[in-house]
Image (cartoon, rainbow, N blue to C red; front, side, top):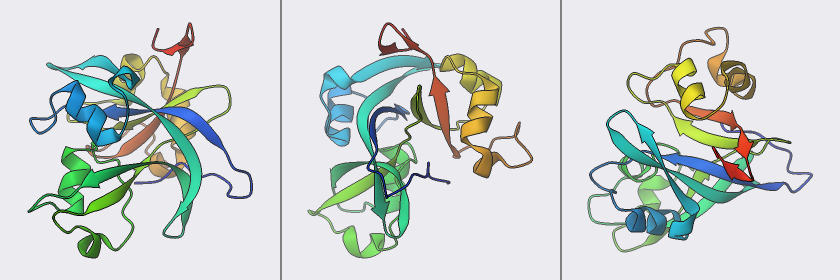
Amino acid sequence: MVPFSCSSIRTTTCSATLYHITTAANTTPQQVAADYSVSPSQLKPIAHLDRQDLLVTVPCACQGVNGTVAYFYDTHYAVKTGDTFANVSAEVYSGQAWPTGDEARRFIAGKSVTMNLLCGCSAGEDVVTYTVQDGDTLFGVATMLASDVKGIQRLNGKLLGNSSDFIDVGEVLFVPVTINNGTLLG
Protein backbone atom coordinates (compact mmCIF):
# COMPACT_ATOMS: atom_id res chain seq x y z
CA MET A 1 0.00 0.00 0.00
CA VAL A 2 1.45 3.35 -1.07
CA PRO A 3 -0.18 6.50 0.35
CA PHE A 4 -0.96 9.60 -1.74
CA SER A 5 1.87 11.83 -0.53
CA CYS A 6 1.62 15.55 0.16
CA SER A 7 3.67 18.34 1.66
CA SER A 8 3.21 19.03 5.35
CA ILE A 9 4.51 22.56 4.72
CA ARG A 10 1.24 23.57 3.05
CA THR A 11 -2.00 22.43 4.63
CA THR A 12 -4.10 20.92 1.87
CA THR A 13 -7.61 19.61 2.16
CA CYS A 14 -10.16 18.50 -0.39
CA SER A 15 -13.32 16.52 -0.81
CA ALA A 16 -12.35 12.96 -1.72
CA THR A 17 -14.18 9.69 -2.28
CA LEU A 18 -13.56 6.28 -0.71
CA TYR A 19 -14.82 3.21 -2.57
CA HIS A 20 -16.53 0.97 -0.01
CA ILE A 21 -16.80 -2.75 -0.83
CA THR A 22 -20.07 -4.08 0.57
CA THR A 23 -19.66 -7.26 2.64
CA ALA A 24 -21.90 -9.34 4.87
CA ALA A 25 -20.58 -7.34 7.85
CA ASN A 26 -21.65 -3.95 6.49
CA THR A 27 -24.61 -4.18 4.15
CA THR A 28 -26.82 -1.26 5.16
CA PRO A 29 -26.09 2.35 4.21
CA GLN A 30 -26.81 3.38 7.81
CA GLN A 31 -24.10 1.03 9.13
CA VAL A 32 -21.60 2.16 6.51
CA ALA A 33 -22.33 5.83 7.29
CA ALA A 34 -21.79 5.13 11.00
CA ASP A 35 -18.52 3.25 10.34
CA TYR A 36 -17.17 6.17 8.29
CA SER A 37 -18.60 8.87 10.63
CA VAL A 38 -20.53 10.49 7.77
CA SER A 39 -24.14 11.30 6.97
CA PRO A 40 -26.02 8.79 4.76
CA SER A 41 -26.30 11.66 2.24
CA GLN A 42 -22.53 11.29 1.69
CA LEU A 43 -23.03 7.77 0.25
CA LYS A 44 -23.67 7.04 -3.41
CA PRO A 45 -24.42 3.52 -4.72
CA ILE A 46 -22.27 2.04 -7.48
CA ALA A 47 -22.69 -1.34 -9.17
CA HIS A 48 -19.75 -3.75 -9.20
CA LEU A 49 -20.19 -7.31 -10.47
CA ASP A 50 -23.22 -8.83 -8.71
CA ARG A 51 -23.54 -6.38 -5.81
CA GLN A 52 -23.99 -2.73 -4.99
CA ASP A 53 -21.01 -1.02 -3.39
CA LEU A 54 -20.87 2.55 -2.11
CA LEU A 55 -18.88 5.70 -2.81
CA VAL A 56 -18.27 7.61 0.44
CA THR A 57 -17.51 11.34 0.20
CA VAL A 58 -15.13 12.50 2.94
CA PRO A 59 -12.94 15.49 3.78
CA CYS A 60 -9.35 14.53 2.99
CA ALA A 61 -6.38 16.27 4.63
CA CYS A 62 -2.60 16.24 4.42
CA GLN A 63 -1.31 15.04 7.79
CA GLY A 64 1.40 13.03 9.47
CA VAL A 65 0.55 9.54 10.71
CA ASN A 66 3.35 7.68 12.50
CA GLY A 67 6.06 9.36 10.40
CA THR A 68 4.20 9.18 7.07
CA VAL A 69 3.01 12.49 5.61
CA ALA A 70 0.15 11.81 3.22
CA TYR A 71 -3.55 12.38 2.63
CA PHE A 72 -5.83 10.72 5.18
CA TYR A 73 -9.41 10.79 6.39
CA ASP A 74 -9.78 9.95 10.07
CA THR A 75 -12.77 8.10 11.47
CA HIS A 76 -13.36 6.32 14.76
CA TYR A 77 -14.10 2.65 15.29
CA ALA A 78 -15.48 1.00 18.45
CA VAL A 79 -13.39 -2.15 18.92
CA LYS A 80 -15.33 -5.36 19.51
CA THR A 81 -14.11 -8.61 21.07
CA GLY A 82 -11.98 -10.52 18.57
CA ASP A 83 -11.27 -7.51 16.34
CA THR A 84 -7.81 -7.00 14.89
CA PHE A 85 -6.58 -4.07 12.86
CA ALA A 86 -6.18 -6.32 9.81
CA ASN A 87 -9.73 -7.69 9.88
CA VAL A 88 -11.33 -4.30 10.61
CA SER A 89 -9.35 -2.67 7.81
CA ALA A 90 -10.34 -5.42 5.36
CA GLU A 91 -13.97 -6.00 6.36
CA VAL A 92 -15.11 -2.55 7.48
CA TYR A 93 -12.84 -0.16 5.53
CA SER A 94 -12.13 -2.15 2.33
CA GLY A 95 -8.42 -2.51 3.17
CA GLN A 96 -7.88 1.26 3.08
CA ALA A 97 -6.75 1.83 6.70
CA TRP A 98 -3.13 2.86 7.20
CA PRO A 99 -1.27 0.86 9.89
CA THR A 100 0.35 2.95 12.61
CA GLY A 101 2.52 0.24 14.13
CA ASP A 102 0.81 0.00 17.50
CA GLU A 103 -2.41 -1.73 16.48
CA ALA A 104 -2.07 -4.65 18.91
CA ARG A 105 -1.83 -2.23 21.83
CA ARG A 106 -4.68 -0.01 20.59
CA PHE A 107 -7.19 -2.71 19.60
CA ILE A 108 -8.80 -3.44 22.94
CA ALA A 109 -12.48 -4.41 23.09
CA GLY A 110 -14.63 -1.50 24.21
CA LYS A 111 -12.12 1.19 23.19
CA SER A 112 -12.60 3.68 20.35
CA VAL A 113 -9.64 3.86 17.96
CA THR A 114 -8.82 6.30 15.19
CA MET A 115 -8.67 4.67 11.77
CA ASN A 116 -6.55 6.64 9.29
CA LEU A 117 -8.05 5.93 5.86
CA LEU A 118 -6.09 6.61 2.69
CA CYS A 119 -7.47 9.31 0.41
CA GLY A 120 -6.10 11.69 -2.20
CA CYS A 121 -6.25 15.27 -3.43
CA SER A 122 -5.20 16.31 -6.92
CA ALA A 123 -5.65 19.76 -8.46
CA GLY A 124 -8.55 19.92 -10.88
CA GLU A 125 -9.87 16.41 -10.33
CA ASP A 126 -11.65 14.31 -7.73
CA VAL A 127 -9.81 11.21 -6.49
CA VAL A 128 -11.41 7.90 -5.55
CA THR A 129 -9.49 5.55 -3.23
CA TYR A 130 -10.22 2.10 -4.71
CA THR A 131 -9.20 -1.36 -3.48
CA VAL A 132 -8.54 -3.86 -6.29
CA GLN A 133 -10.98 -6.79 -6.29
CA ASP A 134 -10.86 -10.23 -7.89
CA GLY A 135 -11.34 -9.94 -11.64
CA ASP A 136 -10.44 -6.24 -11.85
CA THR A 137 -8.30 -4.77 -14.62
CA LEU A 138 -7.07 -1.20 -14.90
CA PHE A 139 -9.36 -0.71 -17.89
CA GLY A 140 -12.35 -2.10 -15.97
CA VAL A 141 -11.69 0.11 -12.93
CA ALA A 142 -11.22 3.15 -15.20
CA THR A 143 -14.48 2.43 -17.02
CA MET A 144 -16.48 1.85 -13.82
CA LEU A 145 -15.25 5.08 -12.23
CA ALA A 146 -15.39 7.32 -15.35
CA SER A 147 -11.61 7.60 -15.45
CA ASP A 148 -8.90 6.47 -17.84
CA VAL A 149 -5.97 4.06 -17.56
CA LYS A 150 -3.34 6.78 -18.11
CA GLY A 151 -4.80 8.84 -15.25
CA ILE A 152 -4.69 5.84 -12.90
CA GLN A 153 -1.10 5.11 -13.95
CA ARG A 154 -0.16 8.77 -13.38
CA LEU A 155 -1.49 8.82 -9.80
CA ASN A 156 -0.09 5.37 -8.90
CA GLY A 157 3.40 5.38 -10.45
CA LYS A 158 5.15 4.30 -7.23
CA LEU A 159 2.78 1.35 -6.76
CA LEU A 160 2.48 0.21 -10.35
CA GLY A 161 6.12 0.75 -11.34
CA ASN A 162 7.17 -0.90 -14.59
CA SER A 163 4.29 -3.37 -14.56
CA SER A 164 1.77 -0.58 -15.00
CA ASP A 165 -0.93 -2.81 -16.50
CA PHE A 166 -0.80 -5.45 -13.75
CA ILE A 167 -2.75 -4.99 -10.52
CA ASP A 168 -3.12 -7.34 -7.55
CA VAL A 169 -6.21 -8.02 -5.45
CA GLY A 170 -6.02 -5.87 -2.32
CA GLU A 171 -3.86 -3.11 -3.80
CA VAL A 172 -5.15 0.37 -3.07
CA LEU A 173 -5.32 2.64 -6.13
CA PHE A 174 -6.00 6.35 -6.46
CA VAL A 175 -8.34 6.94 -9.39
CA PRO A 176 -8.87 10.41 -10.91
CA VAL A 177 -12.52 10.79 -11.89
CA THR A 178 -14.75 12.96 -14.00
CA ILE A 179 -16.96 15.46 -12.24
CA ASN A 180 -20.35 16.01 -13.93
CA ASN A 181 -22.64 18.81 -12.76
CA GLY A 182 -20.66 19.11 -9.54
CA THR A 183 -21.16 15.46 -8.55
CA LEU A 184 -18.98 12.41 -8.94
CA LEU A 185 -19.99 10.26 -11.90
CA GLY A 186 -22.96 12.46 -12.79
